[in-house]
Amino acid sequence: MTKPSPIKSLLIFFGALVILGIVFSAINLNAPKPAAIDLGTLARQITNGEVKAVTVKDSTLNIVTNDKKDEVASKEGGESFTSVMKNLGVTDDKLAAIDLKVANASAFSNWMSVMLPIVLPILAIGVLVLFMMRSVQGQNSRAMSFGQSGAREYGKNDKNRLTFGDVAGAAEAKEELMEIVEFLKSPKKFVAVGAKIPKGVLLMGPPGTGKTLMARAVAGEANVPFFHISGSEFVEMFVGVGAARVRDLFARAKKSAPCIIFIDEIDAVGRQRGAGLGGSHDEREQTLNQILVEMDGFDPSIGIIVMAATNRPDVLDPALLRPGRFDRRVTLDLPDINEREMILKIHAKSKPLVAELPLRKVAERTPGFSGADLANVMNEAAILTARKNRKTIELDDILMSIEKVMLGPERRSRVINEKEKNIVAYHEAGHALVFHEMPEADPVQKISIIARGHAGGYTLKMPLEDKRLHPKSAFIADLAGSLGGYVAEVEAFGEANVTTW
Ligand code: ADP
Image (cartoon, rainbow, N blue to C red; front, top):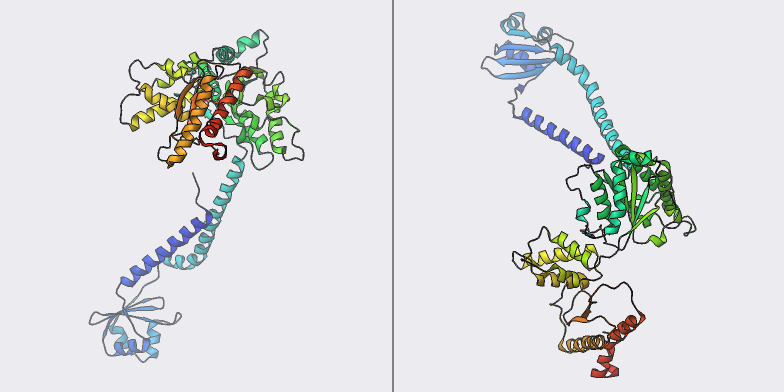
C-alpha cells in the first residue's frame, strides 16, 4: 500500500477546512438579517411607542417593532440597557411599556467563547504534528524493510505444488535429489545413525534446463516450504544490505524449518573473491561471507537445505564448494531425444493437440533445445493456432514454432528489392550446396530467403541424432559451408560484387 505524501495530506486537510468555511458562511449568508440600528434611533422608536419587545443578550439588543420587524443594535458591554436608554432621554413609563427580556448567555456558549480560541489552534497544530509523524514513520519502515530479503515463499501444501512428475527426464538428478527429499521428510532418521546431512546442493546446467523447476519439485515432493530468491536480489547500492538480507532470509527459513532455500543465479554473489581489487566488490563479498557464515551456523538436523543454481560453476568461489557447504553437485544437461519427447508431452497436457500428433517427430527436429525452449515451442504453437482461429494444434504449427524460437519471427513485410533477393538466394544456395556435399556436416533441412529475426535468409541444417562429441572434421565442414555463400556470390556476380551478406 502506498502512503500519501505529507504535503498531499496537508493540502487535503487545508482544502477541507476552506470548503467547510465556505459552506458555513454560505448558510449564514442565506439567513435573513435583521436591520442594524444605532442606540439613538432605538431611543427615538421607544419614545414614539414603536417598539414592542427588546431582548438583551450581553451587548446585543434584539428588537421587535410593533409592525413585527426585527432589528438589532449594540450597546457597551458594562452598562445596563435601561440606563443607556435613560441617558438618551427615554422616560421610565415608555421603558415600562416595552416587553424587556434579559437572556443570559448559556453556560456552554460562555465556555465555548473562552475555550475555542485556545483549543482550535492546539487542535490544528496537533493534526499537523500527527501528519508529520505518520510520514516520518513511513520512511522509517521503508528503511527497515531494506534489510528484508524479499524472498518469495511457497508454503507447505501449496496448491501449485510441483512434484518430480512435472519434471521430465533428468532421471539421475532426480535420483540424487530423492535423498534430499527423504531427509527433509524425516531428518531424525538420518541423524540417529550418525549420518551427516548435506546442507547445500548446487544445481548446474545451461539456462532453461529446469533447475528452478527441479528445486521446486524437491520442495513439493517433501511438502516443505520453499523460499526463492535470486542472487542479484541481495545486492543493493548500499554496502551491508546484502548481508542483512541473507540474515533475514535464514531467520525466516529457520522459523519454517524443515524447508528449502533456493538461491537462483548464485554466481551473481558467489564469484571468486579477491578478483576485483579496489573495494568495488565489497558488497558482493560481504554478502557471500554472510551466506557462508549462515550455512556454517545452522544445525543441520533442523532441516534447512540450501539449493543454488548456476550456469557458471567455473566462476564460483571455492569456499562455496568446500565440504559442508555446496558439496552436493547435481548437473542438469540439455535433454536428449527421449527427454525432449517427455518434456513436450508435459507441455502438451493442457493443450488440444490433433489426434495422434507424433511428438517424437518434434523431438527429432529439436536437438540442442532446452526444456524452456521446448515449453516455448508448444506455447508459440498454441498462439499460432489461436491466431488462425483453429481449435486444435497441428504438427505444422509446431514445426513453424520451432523456427520462430530458433531464429525469431518471420518478417514477410520487410521490403527487399529484386536484386537483393537474387543475391540472398544465390548466397543461401551456396551454403546449402556445400553443406550437402560435405558428409561430415549436418543435413540441410530448409533454405529460405524470407527474412526472419536478424537473418535476411537462412539455411537450416540439423543433426539427425543427438551428438555430444564433435569431431574436427565436422567443424571444418561447418567452416566450408559458411564460406559457401561467399563463393556462390563470387561465382554468380564476380569478385567485385560480393556483398556484406
Ligand atoms: P533454469 O532455472 O534452469 O533456467 P527453469 O527451471 O526456470 O530453468 O525452466 C524454465 C521452464 O522450462 C520451466 O518453467 C518449464 O516450463 C520448462 N522446463 C525446463 N526443463 C523442464 C523439464 N525437464 N520438464 C518440464 N519442463 C521443463
